[in-house]
Amino acid sequence: MTRNDAREIMMQILYEMDAQKSLDQEKAQQLASERLPGDHAVRGGNLLSETVTHLEEIDADINKYASRWKTSRMPKVDLAIMRLACGEIRYCDDIPEAVTINEAINMAKKYSTDNSARFIHGVLGAITKGNKDD
Image (cartoon, rainbow, N blue to C red):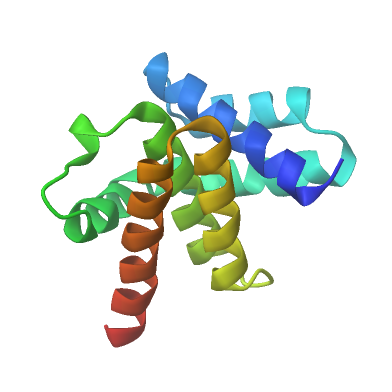
């Protein structure tokens, strides 16, 4: 399994947890260990756990840079992709931000629309630029 495959599964986990309104650390760790093999399970569990733990801050960043859109109105797939990418940008120092953004765009093209890919690119780009300016 590649990191890309693992990212897709983690995005699906975030989507599922949001749909079921069960965004908590324990559930994130459990689903990661069930669906991701070996090292991906540990790494993915940690990333999902951090993302869920800091969801308010992540959503605040998304809301701040998503012009005229709030997380409550966004398509759930797009939101899961951006939440995962924001978590990776914040908590995975070994992955360049550009790689994370590119992977998020590719997931949006695969699971959502071209408009979503452009929107996600703009929001994530603004978040990374804004975090550097802070």
